[in-house]
Length: 150
Image (cartoon, rainbow, N blue to C red):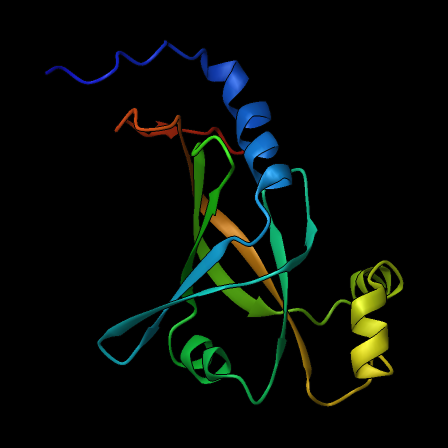
């Protein structure tokens, strides 16, 4: 039995399609590496920029802190209710920009509720800058490279 025939997608449609999946997906999965063992866990991004840069809040005591410090290569996988997916490959870095940190803090009531202040030493915000973004329609089994700005 042949699989479904995917509908063609114009390259210029891909960024909007990918952003739609990112908006609809509740909890993307973040992959890190722990020595020679991959680790995957759901995360709640606290900001998403137009260029597919993703910001993820973390606590210093979490396992991914040491994993990212040892190897900053990560991948996020977003899967929406229609099973369309976006994979963002990139490097995680600790965000130090005070303006962006303040914007994230002010825009996220959960951070404020649980961590008290942006100076809480447990708080880390990772900025994941994409090196590659791929989009796939449900079960199409074919990824499309999403063009990155600039």
